[in-house]
Length: 432
Figure 1 (cartoon, rainbow, N blue to C red):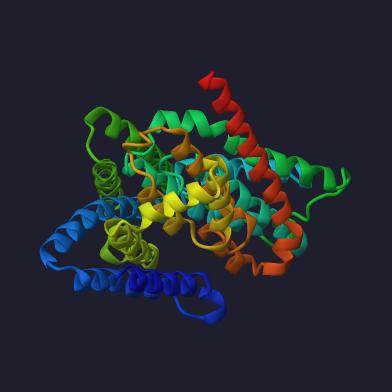
Figure 2: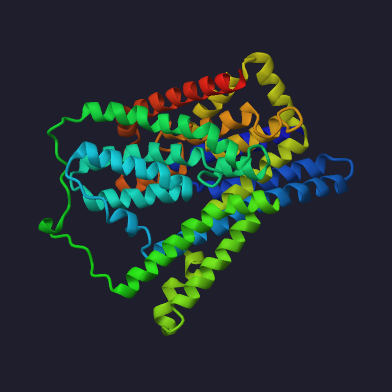
């Protein structure tokens, strides 16, 4: 059974990693892999009932993550439908490349912590496309946005899927993960940002797209301005409310996210209640639900089911023991996990790590979980295909894999290592 499970999971993992070269959608692969793993497990078990009980247990945990992501994605789409993000983006105005780089990267960093790294990357690259006409300048900006968005998502329980998984699983708590990872994640952005600033000539000006280039902002009525302000404020404040709700009530995070979704949904209905059906359509939650990235939700379902099967059979426990015997240093193991997440999706890697190390040995807010959140969240920036944000930007700006490797990967590596060293130093100081 163990050999069969390893083969099925290994082939599935390989096909997911090679999604782009072979042209097979990773969601389909993940779903097939997840179900096949449980099929192998139940057919090899002497009695099916315990396996079904284990599957139900894992499905309950997985559902919490999926409903949380579903709610968050819908809220973001509702804000975007009302052009809420233009409240931030319309205020960016500079012709100096260095200044523009810092504004966009720092905005990406903090916005990612409130939303998520994928949404933030898409929003900020869209902003860069409106502001910068020079293709090479825009590509460099897009590469730095990937680094900033991934780093910003790592220190927030709602900013990156992997951190969210650890938060929902009880491995990290809201205040502690923010306290321990904010500075390392910020260093992860500031180090490559400083290097990039030195590489840009002081006199270099960004080729900014303005009205003189034939681009003008559409007229916004006072009512539209009011609506976008209300939806932007309600959406972002609601997302910030979710960790508070969990802390106060001790209910699972998805319940808070569903509460916020209901409130934002109701607000949208009230705002547009006097419009006819055709005008209201694109502002409804039903429309927002049709625009969310449903394949990503199903991908998480498939890969988490597969990892759940490996955990139930004890395979992940054996793997952790093997890594400890061969490498020994837990910090080095986590660093390597972060590098591996640039090649293979960080979601299954973190899911596997959560199965390898249990909460009895490594309780909530242990150094292992904090460092894993940082490394898995920021390590994906090392390659353009290493994170959802990178893949999205790759498609939007047509970033070439080799170009990113030459121009951005080494900067991402500087940030990744610098942030990791800062985290280890901070932990040594606080533990002393």
